[in-house]
Every structure is written in structure tokens, then in C-alpha cells.
Image 1 (cartoon, rainbow, N blue to C red):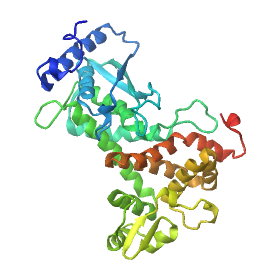
Image 2 (image 1 turned 90 degrees about the vertical axis):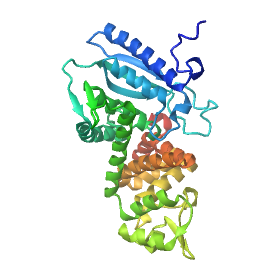
Image 3 (image 1 turned 30 degrees about the vertical axis):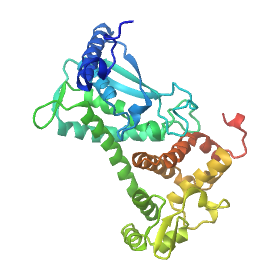
Image 4 (image 1 turned 90 degrees about the horizontal axis):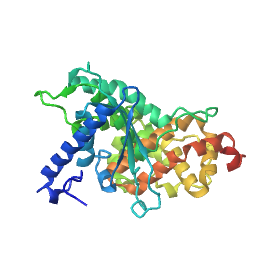
Length: 366
């Protein structure tokens, strides 16, 4: 079959990466323009984008040239993106997914023709609009809409897919305008837009830290700096004071060990298996989260649900901290730790049901 006309960005067919990317963008733009011309205004156009695992290796979600070019082609063709959603179209046990935080292997993009009256704005207004609209969408994605009486509400999305799913609301804002201009008058590229979207996600979780207890805020900052390794007592003491807590208090709370001038956070498997929140007078959200992960790994959703039943007031904070720590670990390259936080969120609905009805069987719960 003819290969030169095949719409793929293959460098060796086009004398280099830049030429290959230009070929792909031009061809995909023409294809999207045809779709836009043929699309009925009363119905959205749904596009499925399948990507290679290597495209997800960057720090900005799916940040490969192919993905950015694909988004640029859609916007240039006159479409406005109104939603994106990750889909699992490959088995979790496929060889590329074993031992990794494998992302969804396809993205569904929902598009409509851009309004002919669309405005041109500058970058500052675009950022203000992102800050105004995205936090509500992030909150919906991490908390969902379903409650105990609503079986058909939206479930919270897994942390591993959050950055992908947020592309939809972010790119909806980007693509609703005829153009977004940089300070020098040049068009704002898709790559910059994606980076700004991810920065808003970071701002959301950074702001939510203010509602956490001082012990947890210390653990989060220390973990970001040292992970599970030891650090100097002096540095820990200074940080603890800044978070309105103390190293001795943190040791009493059972989240770290302090010996011979060195401080280290307790790893998940070091937490006591006989822990009972009702008998703990000082329970940081950090401790509650890692105890639930320990229980999930050793006793399944029922064991984690039993712990949650004893501390329902901490449920939202535990889940939000799991998202925050997943994002941190993913960017640090700590895949094993990231996986544990992701798995707790994925299991959250089952854990919550067990916490509400600890005596029910799996069949009754689902």
C-alpha cells in the first residue's frame, strides 16, 4: 500500500522531524476541515484519539508533539472542543501496562463548530477565565456527583487520568475564541495552553492544602523534599514550626520517627495493623490516608471501609490528599507510590459503600 500519503508524522519519510510534523498538521487540518464542513450544527462531532504509551511520558499529561499537533489541527479547522474523556481500550494486563501507571489508551474528543461571532482575546484574559471556570470542573471530577441514593451520578475520575480529562474543559475555553494572543501579538500555541491548564490544576490542590491540619501540611512538604528518606532534624524542626506543629508532636501522632538528629516519615507498611481511629486522639489526614491504603492492600475495600466508617469527617480530605500526592509522585517519577494513591481513589466508591454498610456482601453492595 502507498505509504507516503499516510497521515503519520514519520521523520524518515519527510526528511526530518519538523517536516514530518508540518505534514501531519497540514493533512490533519484538511481532514478536520472536511469534518467541520460536513458536520450538522445540531450534533457534536466525536473523535477518538488513540496514542502510544510513550506519548504520556512527559510531565504535562499527554504532552507529545503528535497530541499537541492533533489538538491544533482541530482548533485551526474551526472546531471548538467541548469535552475530552479518557477511555480504557486496552487490557490492564497488557505488557506495556504491567508495573506502570498506565494511562487510558484513547481519548474521546467532543467538538462543535466554533461560533462565527467568537472574540479575539489576550493571554491575560485567557488565564483569568481558566482560573474562574476550571476549579469548579476539577472539583466535579475529583468528587463526582453520585451520592448514596444516586446510582447514575458521575463517579470521581482516577488521579492517573485527571490531567487528560481536564484538557476538555481547558481546551473548551481555549477553542471558544477566534484567537488568543501573546503579549507580542502572536497566537498562543496549544503547548502553552496545556501548560497553563496544568498550572491551574496545581493551584487548585495548593489552595486546598490550607484546609489541612498542620501535621499533614508538614508531611506533605517533607515528603516533597525527602520522600521516604531521612533528613536533618534541624530542617524538620524549622519546617514543623512553620506549619504550626512540632517534630515531637508528629512522632506522637505516629507519622514519623526521629532518632539521632535524623527524621523520616513512616512508610505505608510501617503503620500498625491494629490501629483504631476511635482510640487515636491525634489523627492527621496524612495518617488516615496511609492507614487506609495499608488496609486496602492487606484487607481489601471492606477493611479500608471499616476505617473510613470510624472517621467520616475526614473522607473528602483523604481523597483530595490522595489526588495531590499522586500528582506529586507522578512528577517526581515515584511510580510505585503514585500507584497506591491512584488505586485508593479507584476503589473509593466500594470503600465508601463498605463504610456505610460494613455487613453487606459484595453482591448486595453492587
